[in-house]
Length: 109
Ligand code: 2BA
Image (cartoon, rainbow, N blue to C red; front, side):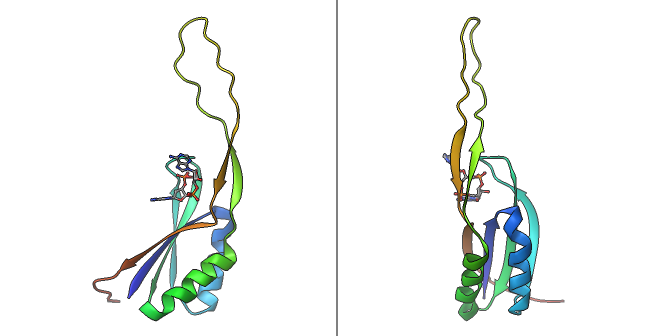
């Protein structure tokens, strides 16, 4: 068995969970936020049989799209008289960041 951990856009998470449930996978949605952008995203965890992992990844691929986000960098600490012109930065946030982990033991008690 494997644990698929997918970090996805909030906007994609609902459709992704629905699609996983429709194809008879069990999924849990966790609220999370990115370390770099500090913006809210969603972490979906799915326990799947080894031979079901590819199907899970296919569903993630089909439901998650990458987006460009504009970030305003934090101004640096400045000396008196210094001037900081903030240039917005474009960052491409992937459709999903996915980790597949081995599960040592799984029980539903
Ligand atoms: P964030 O950490 O908020 O990162 C959002 C996007 O910012 C990233 O998209 C990437 O394009 C960019 N980025 C991140 N760190 C950067 C850096 N040090 N320098 C320049 N640009 C940087 P993705 O790579 O698609 O990641 C989307 C979200 O997935 C991340 O949100 C984070 O929550 C998670 N993630 C990505 N890689 C991870 C990893 N190795 N471990 C844990 N979480 C990860």
